[in-house]
Amino acid sequence: MARESAEATRIMVAVNQSSIKGYPHASISSRTAFEWAVTKLVRSNVTGFRLLFVHAQVPDEDAFDDMDSIYASPEDFKNMKERDKIRGLHLLEYFVERSHQYGIPCEAWIRKGDPKEVICNEVKNVHPDLLVVGSRGLGPFQRVFVGTVSEFCVKHVECPVITIKRRPDEIPRDPIDD
Image 1 (spheres, rainbow, N blue to C red):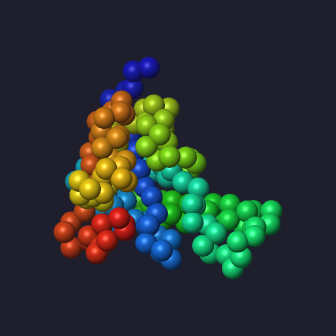
Image 2 (cartoon, rainbow, N blue to C red):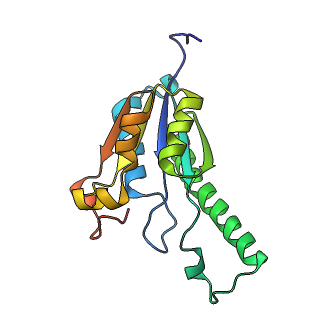
């Protein structure tokens, strides 16, 4: 379906939580990608753009680290799922509130699964004009074992992709942390 020229440019921003333990906030890369999109693309033309935030929620592999016992009850699993849901909503709330502070219309949603697959599927389903993703700046060794969502998206999504690197002063001691 052809879109009218007066329709807002839809920018999908893939966001994630910080991987630093005990820090359930937006990652450095997500915040940097969002701020770049706002300052470099949207600027003062807030009515010409619509931000689409997607968060790929990966099941918490370390969930049992937070428990006192190795034995888990059905209630433990229910609590973990509820905690993950709350963290995901808290993350999206951050970006929605920031968008509203700038006066930019937006939408936000959570999908469960591998971020690479989730983002590619959401681009296929939503058809944004542009995808903006943050990059942690992993070195060649870390990329082999961790892989990068941004590189995968550049190769596989069906729209233009802008990858935003962190500034040198934003890089934590451990490059895996974000």
